[in-house]
Length: 148
Image (tube, rainbow, N blue to C red):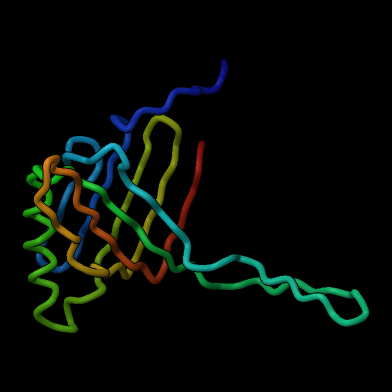
């Protein structure tokens, strides 16, 4: 049987769980066209070349990164995230304790980000077109499995 070669955001589920609540962020949350992005903080490898041309590789244990959730300005999910961010800003005990999980059930992708914190409140504007709000999270550890 041939592998499935079809992608659809409809198959993407994403959740944020942390102090103060639980928010659905995948399909059905009012995502903008730009959707969800996972970005690592640094390279896995650093290559060093000596004066004589010999070299070495250094493996980084850093698994940190950033996750950006882009929602339509009119999405009700913005209010849920704002309420959660406000709760988590009240104490250091509630900051940076979120877990974000992203799954694409069709292709088998799974991303789990732990010790995630709201990086900032999104920039907001009122213009001719409503646009989107970008919610950004810094995560201490992001584990990814792509495909089945």
